[in-house]
Image (tube, rainbow, N blue to C red; front, side, top):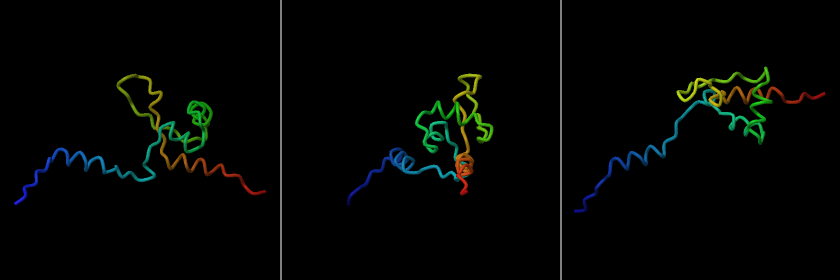
Length: 94
């Protein structure tokens, strides 16, 4: 008879690495690099200074950090809001 030995810890690690967190599209958060990538802006600083600063751009979610009292760099945007904002700027037919 063949005996099979299973390393439960290793099995758990493999299973965890194969599972992905299922987040609804309207709940996904993007950082500035993901927003700039979606919008086709190669320079993340350009996105932050010129697009995210627009009064019509969705307001960010400011994630707190213990590293600094200043929250800069911790901003996240709801992906569906960024997409809706971008699509709202579609050119109108004359």
